[in-house]
Length: 147
Image: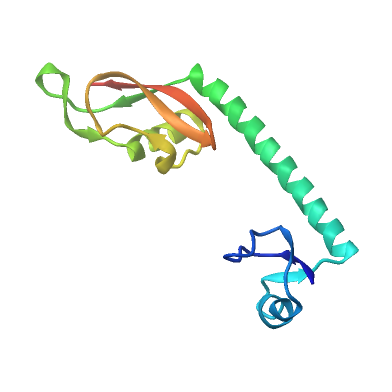
């Protein structure tokens, strides 16, 4: 029997794959558990439409991420903090602090988990901070720490 997998099935295939399995496996295991549906012309057609929509959505997200990366390149975020002698901070600036500053100053919402820091910033100065926007697309933003 030929079926379309709705979810990943170990040893059989991944979600969206059209695979041939034994009739008993399909009727007793895959279909009752909602892991697969029978591969009729209508179901195959709807699967193709879903894949097209998903590809279009990914392309739109990628274009938006590239646009955002270009915008971030020219922007700068200034964070005021207290520092001691030699420009050493009292405490440190973390990705959460940077995400909050981006939201307040630039009006962009960025998840703190997407901000790539080697470690917390502990010195006054200007830093280039990498932000993961989409799969392989990353934006670089200047963050200035002032007293």
